[in-house]
Image (cartoon, rainbow, N blue to C red; front, side):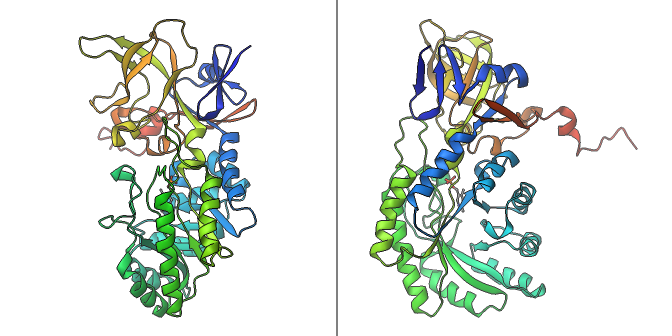
Length: 427
Ligand SMILES: *Cc1c(COP(=O)(O)O)cnc(C)c1O
């Protein structure tokens, strides 16, 4: 039997004429669980994590998985068992980490709009660090901590004002971004933090954007961060850790991001040269740990050839996989069982009543109604952004480990969807 790997997707391969993720035939999972269906490779996640671990060999580092990329309990459990901490952006995220057996002291809490209730609960749980994003938030956090007779461990998220050269919706480190403390206010804000009785300054943090495929913005951001660390420490405020955020891109379609180990070896050369190589470091990768570990499986409902466009209508849609609609993102789409026929050009769309409901434009596919397709690179920011638009239940999720496949989330039913609603027909 011939085995044909997919470029940039080491855990996916055609064996004979059937697509496998690790050692599991994907069409078998469809027989059991139906479509749409998300399937993730545990080995792919651990291989992505191992690249970071190699890059940091011999250094003090805490890798905090940015769980908004994929917050499934089963996914968090894989990373918790591998020793990861977690970058959370809500109290709900924290509940997930604790429910999955993650350790509170390895949690860092990011986000521009933390509520007092979220702060209180995170302090009670004993999280490792609040990544504070504004002066106003700093004052509130100090008040909340003092009311509990505590001091909140804080790192300020600074906005280094570098352009990550990615999509504007996922670039976060430029002037004019809602994120982080403006570069020229950083020192003042640290000085203020040092006077607040409810605040314990422990670090500095940045996160410049997402799907970054170029090393230069990271090097620029690192230089600007280290300049700030020097200035803050010269002002008498020591910092225990430096957090460089996440943002490393993945290969969706001929993207060529640096490998995590290569990126970090280069950054560590810079840190060493500037005398910071032995500091406690932190990073917050999300997409690069899970993005290429996942596929979304879907069935072709109808073919609708037209004068200007041919439409291939799937049972997966923008509610399952919002990235194309939100960011004009590209995901490869491949058949589970390729046909020996001449491909035609299709716009691959979902059933939702929006013209923005597409998964791929102008794709060369040899398909028939009833065929199964896999949307690739669907492990990050797909299921985590899924919605119930058009009363569509969210898809189930399966975690593959070698020959084993475990259901980690059931398909959402209509009863699940209507549970929070109150009928006018019952008194
Ligand atoms: C989203 C986010 C991350 C992770 O970004 P990726 O591009 O998925 O690696 C890390 N840190 C913060 C603060 C974030 O908001």
